[in-house]
Image 1 (cartoon, helix red, strand yellow):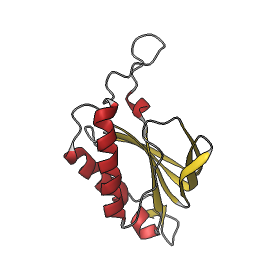
Image 2 (cartoon, helix red, strand yellow; image 1 turned 30 degrees about the vertical axis):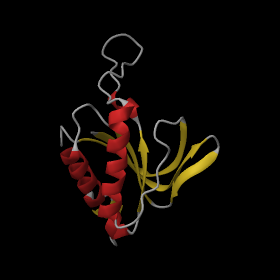
Image 3 (cartoon, one colour; image 1 turned 90 degrees about the horizontal axis):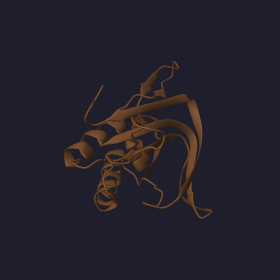
Image 4 (cartoon, rainbow, N blue to C red; image 1 turned 90 degrees about the vertical axis):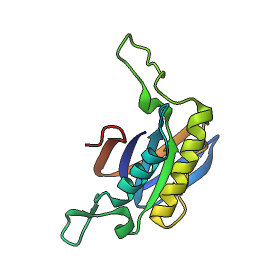
Length: 150
């Protein structure tokens, strides 16, 4: 499982011009899955995201988690995180899990995030052509892989 997480002042995702998810301050999480991802990957990633200290404390130091900051999380599925550009100029999506695998993984991941955050996690629409708008705060952007935790 791979995510790109951005600390945001606000973010929203829309499908066909209709907003399907919107948050104020918090984290925008773009999530991709590969064959072989399972419950352990989802548990590890959800726990990591809600505990990451990306929000400023009283002294302006990134020392608070999204939970401690009272922030929200917006989750958007994004198979393109598993693009390979090793050969040629057209990305290959061979490592990305098929929709029938990644759809249930994404739904389970959102449930785990919501449980760890203690509130609902808005999303886009799995498999849809989505438009994501955000105001990146910092900017703070991290790439995290459950198979290569750094």
